[in-house]
Amino acid sequence: MSIRVGIIGSRFVASAHAEALRQTPGVELTAVASPNAEHAWEFHRRFDVEHTFTDYKDLLSSGFVDAITIACPNDLHAQVTIDAAAAGKHVLVDKPMAMSLAECDRMIEACKKAGVILMYGENLCFAPKYVRAKQLADQGALGDVYYVRQLECHFGPHSDWFWDINRSGGGVLMDMGCHSIAYCRWVFGNTPIESVYAEAGNFVHGRRTQGDDHTVVMLRFARSKKHPRGGLGVAENSWARAGGLDDRAEIYGSKGLTVADIARGGALHTYSATGYEYAGEKTERTRGWTWTSFDEVWNYGFPQEMAHFADCIENEKRPMLTGEDGRAVLEIICAAYQSARTGARVSLPLEADSRKPVDYWLKGDPQTRARAEVPLSMPAALPENAEAETKPSAAPVSESDAGQAAPPPEPAEPAKEASDEPPEASAIAQPATAADAGPNATSDDTEPPKADEQPDATTDAAEPAKKPLEEAAEDAAT
Image (cartoon, rainbow, N blue to C red; front, side, top):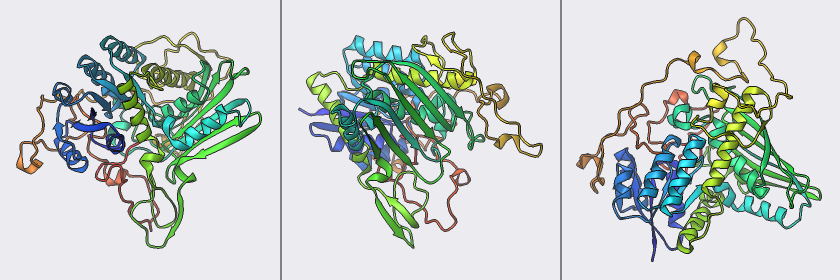
């Protein structure tokens, strides 16, 4: 009997989940929910999904699914998870887990109470090249592992909600730092982390977000039986790096090292005088020398992740990455933001509260566990003729300086299963914008940015085609 899975979301990450589910034996993709009916219709046509909804609650109560994957904006993860658990559905929630530690605790409790699986979605821990690197470490090929570094950088997301800290919970540290932190933890066997130190700044995208666009985080792992001297993990992430996606991991041991490069290590090195259809994620041009990727969904571990989720459901197994792992990653992110503000190492654990992670950086209120032996670095003064709004700064912009936040959107009206007719032949609503997206808004279900907000590219660049994962979907970080 097939496991029937529904997807909450209809854009980039949802497309990756759909491609992966179609490659997973014993799984049937039966439903999708998106408040943007146009997006839901596109998803229906592209992936041949039988049932489409504009309200995820209707999907949960439809009887068409046994489990869901959550691929919607971060501020919706907690409520969707809690509602799914109440409906008796197993849940895979894509990274990051939630908007606060308190939300994580409610999600974990709801799934335990309902007796359903809560799996934390971190595809890098299933990416074949990264899996092989960990296998080398586990087999002793590198000696005693003492250092892990994971780097994921590009020039920033294209969907508006990522830039809005009230929807995303932070900047690049929330968006991509969760990848790097989760991988470092995984290689070290999820050994407890003693302390976190971080630097963060908004160096390039100050006009678009109050959040961070480049971060470096250092993790001090505790001593363990397998790592008697403990170890160091480094997570470096950027929305400010030009030149396309860079995604690498390094593992150092006492007797060796290994370096895994997902973005370029298995790519074709291509020269084209005219440009071509698609090179790879976040590639700004296809003319001249480029790295040409292939089979990105597989190389980034999505089918393997979905196969594991299905195996856990069918055989009642504990997931390799649980809700507790997702919470641990978010706790480290909160500690990193706090460290970036205070300039001090921050010891774990933190006390759970309802603050969104970036508030530890923007609003402060550092906890007493922060140690002040590391001096706080201050940004250098600008020349008199410099423009203040474009200066690189290691200090966050206060919310008071940035103006009052926009009022919350009006709740979306409940909607039933979308019609099988195309939008122009039915009562399907027009695409929502970032401003009018309702509380059921899903990943990238907002209008794309204007052309003048796109990253700069060379003047002779051929316009890059959309990713195979998303086609009509706007580019966004996974």
